[in-house]
Amino acid sequence: MRPATSIGCLILTIGLMTINVRSSIGQCRSLTTMAPDGGAIFDQSPYPNLDAAITIEINLLRQLWSVNPAVFYFDDGPNPNAMSSSLKTNPLMDGHIKIGWNLVLKECQELYTDCTVLPIIIAHEFAHTYAYFRSTVPGTSRRIRYNNKKDELYADYLAGAYMRHREVNFGGVFVPEVIEAFMSRGDYNFNDPTHHGTPEERYEALMAGYEFVSMANRDGVPISIVNVSNKAYVYLKSVD
Image 1: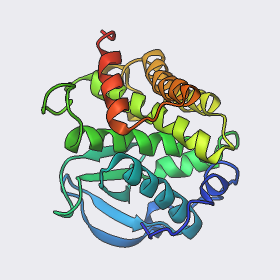
Image 2: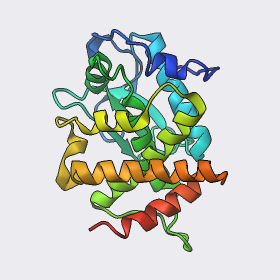
Image 3: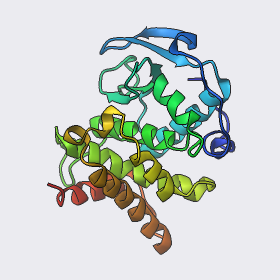
């Protein structure tokens, strides 16, 4: 992804402006390499404005969460999807994230969302990266890994917390509505209840993260990613 120099256009380019994206994966540029887990990955699309907006989102997450994955597009075929891996494409990076190009096409063509669910998806994948490389079980040095749907609900909790931060700092998007739009998707692999939990569980995890940061904001309490991660861990103790 191209480097970005400003975050002022974040909401303008992902949220309030429809980006007319219709190109196939074959028109993506800069084939960089094969992903460690297989398949071609691309670091640019045919749409510089879209790339810049996504890069801004990525840079904000890197700054807030102190985690630095490489991020690429990939061909997700007929099953729009995104994924995070601890496998490294660069020894200096914290694993890698792949955003499906067909997922981007679908989301940015939905007239009622105008790409606004992409930040949740990107934040969800960043949360997995945080779990791989930075998270710790409260009071220990062990990484937070459940190896079941709780991994996904943990990532949803962190994504909801991030969306509250984004709402406060940039405005322009009513996050609960965006979360509902996100959860209305029924055709993505990450909506499989055996893998990611039921839609209700996912919605509750996203909103729990969102409300945790909202309450801290109202009380004037500073929040860090460590606080959010610890709270997510406690929250998931109540989930079967």
